[in-house]
Amino acid sequence: MLLAGFLPVSLLLAVSWLLACWQSAACRDLSEYFLRAKLTEQFEMGVVCLLLLSMFSFVFWLLNPWFRQVLEGRIWPSFVQDWLADSHRKSLRSLQASMQDALHEVGLYRQAVKQWPGQLAADRTGTGRSFTDRNLAPGYEQLNSRLDRYETVPQKDLVPFHDQLVTELHVTSTTHVPELAQILDGFCNTVLPAGLDRAERELYRRVTDRIFQYPAQPRNVGPTKLANIQEAQRDYITSNYGIDVSLFWADLQKVASADEKFAPTLDNAKTRLDFSVAMTAVAAIFTIGWIALNIWFGSRPLVYTLVAMLGLFAILVCQRLVFINYVAFAETVRTSVELFRFQLLKALHLPLPANNNAEQQIWLDLGRKLETGAAITITYDHA
Image (tube, rainbow, N blue to C red; front, side, top):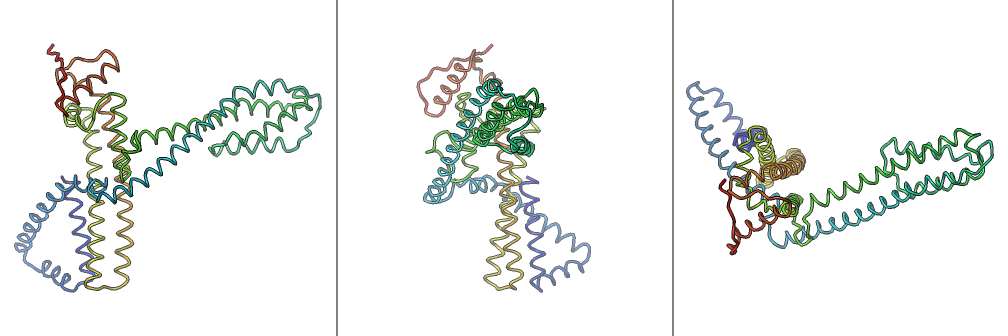
């Protein structure tokens, strides 16, 4: 409650009061009156303000789940949700297309790594004692330079150099020109493997984005990134373990919190998320509220511009923090499932599965039993 309620509200009121004192003589007079008051009067006013602040902070803390639903887009009008979901579906289609391109690139690199070294070795038929292609060495250095800068070099960019190298090997001897032998060895044993590694990393990154940032089915794509991360996590856990995390999270959280080593990790992840959500709400309330007041009562252009720009910047920064902490919390939930799902089965007096298929069936049966009341027999283990 301290980080998700008291601290954000205190910051909101403090900054608002300073801005009010800057604009209003009445606020400045009220501040001077408080400073000139007797110590006992200051104490009484301070107690009253602290009580009001505590009550407001408690209400603000209770509203944190609602603020999170706003950021997830769950309570927006349906036409707004549909419009935003369509934009995320377009992003999903773009990601899927880039996955196909990356997969094709990996296929080309694997084919090159498999075929080119043997072909180049067979092309070493030249007898010349000097380079005929003066652009070969600079071209090789350029490829190495791109790799040293950790660039992803498309396989098609290697084809011209490969053709140049084949032509040179047909006329120049690697025995008499050691530099050509070094270029051949570096191309086959450094450039090609490094290019394949970069291509595979790019493919795995996009596959990871697809799995953990979007739901498995495009029809389940939500209006915001946060909603999509939540659905993606639910689909991932269900497909791997058969667990509907939204149904069993309260039970699983109780089991995970009982672990002395993991409980702080879970608490910290939730606290960081709640704090970032609260700070985003504070930034939005401050910005919208002060813009409305400035429009209604009028203010200097400098004040209006300053509030609008700094407020918008604060909202964007806090919203980014929400996204980062939301991803971290989703990873913590996933880790909780992976580490404590069998302990939850024991706590529910259910038999431990012998394999992954049996585990999925247990969780699916239990989920259908709890959600729909289906006539499924659940066998208990009281050993």
